[in-house]
Image (cartoon, rainbow, N blue to C red; front, top):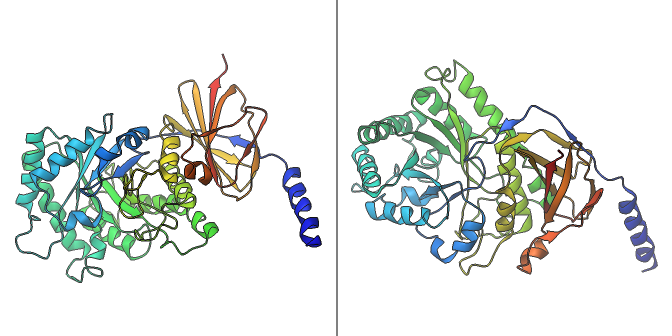
Length: 421
């Protein structure tokens, strides 16, 4: 016991004596696309009407419907689209619609034919539902393995993509199309994406994939360390699109990028790294890094409880992700390159008119100090949250403004600066 009493003051003293982190801001910046932050997946099993306050508090920029495997297990009917339109109306803003068509099916009467896609477009038109992107199917790279049909190659999927695209264009000549929505940003999924690009690079408008780096069994540190990989995946996809050999039909086209599902863990039945603080911090980091990399669309999985995914559970109890996306909704305008002298603090800076928003993830379990000075700007506000904040269902913690701030362990802090006259 004497050793423990002796060591604790030493550890506290070492933490306290560490120099506050400083920030270096560079340029030029990257415009943040309108749908690059705070997009979400939604579906039939997500009762947005029972979580309206939570949904509106994150200001969704887009909703993807029906999202996930459910879209390849259920028909896209007029009733389904009417339900989706009603949910869009609950968001309180001008939320873009991304509709996922049905591709995979085991029943001969399933509505997954080109004429069914055309009917969905007619139904959407009749409902007054303005679809920003039609995403053709979901995770076709897994049809051969998880669904047991090896006939689903990238080439077959491309043929289906072309057929459904053509049918929808016959109804809506201005429609835009997304795909292939492969399951991961690495491994066989990216090989499938490459095959799709080679065969269909001339017809895809938004090239999409998903990010699920773990199954919830990694350590917290290992899990958080996967966040930078999303930026690497963006670089890989851009290289594929620009390569005449890998994209012979579309390498001169302006093909946009989208990550239409992402979460730290793909295991919906396991709360670890989905419904906890680490899962929330990773989700925020992934979205911020994708926006900074110039990705045009992101869709977190999911907006309301789908297993342990979601901003709130089925009883409306908030999860850390709710607080994280409430912070992220302020990240708009232009993303400016920023670096921290402390590797535990991950900063992200946006500029929108006279305001700058600095979001800082403290990945460490203990508090770290940050120097707040930013030449030409004055700090006007700082809010943060920890897992305890969420457990208490409390408001954000308002930090006392000063030349340095103590950022709590495993927190996401938002600092707002105003340009000096």
